[in-house]
Image (cartoon, rainbow, N blue to C red; front, side, top):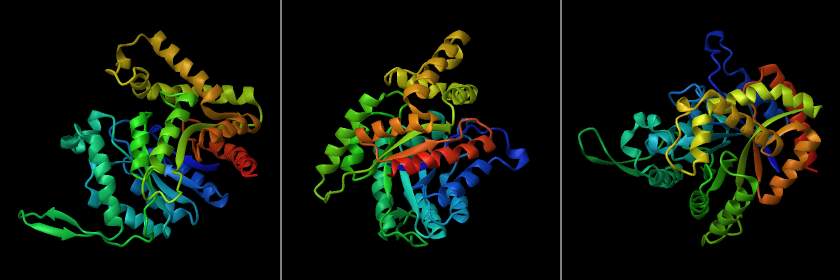
Length: 350
């Protein structure tokens, strides 16, 4: 099992202090110094939930300059919001700064308001995502793209600077739809997913479908695919102490993501507006989600408990655990907890 760090925290209101990105950079340095696989930062717009991360290329460039070994990944680029040339250009810069350490997960986007950046892409966003993946791949290899310039004439353009890596590592982000798993496999990409709206047994079925799609590619050449699972993570020495330590911040985090939670629980039907729910109903949903995450959906508690979770995830076919660490605990507390996470990483590598 590979271990990486994943960020998707609330804005937190630390901008005035100049410390909003302390955990990102200090955590990245820890990951770099302790043989973690990667650091992931997402793309999120117009909302405090995830609001620190409107552009993973910018945070990726900062991480690249602060590290020397760890991989730097977007988790994820919302492809329909951007021109493929812009994606390839920006990440080629980060690839150069890092000496060839970038990788990209692509997402189709889920929130209509995000598409204020490119409203024409919303209706066909899933197809646009896969089309963009192939265009970015081609540009990364040095191929040209036909575009129209400012006076309406066709031009053939390529990206500069040239990336360091000849092949761009790619994943597709899925909120749990089995077709996205299959399509990612058919595209020869990895899969990045989470446990919001799917349990471990469901995940196992989807991973199997993904592996079948990968194996069916004529150019698979023995590559089995790559599955990354994002999990909320904080480890300590005593399970009861950790439970009480993470309860308030994790419940607050889950409350902030309630729109996502409810959307996934309704099986893709019309989303329930959390603002229309009674407070006691919100408390019930958040409390149930907390118990699920703590007991069966995260690396939360002690190292031995987490090791059992990792063993189960590996048995399901997960290749990398992306540890979401910025769900509301104080920065020092999170950084201190990384020592226990590193202990788990070493234990799982034996």
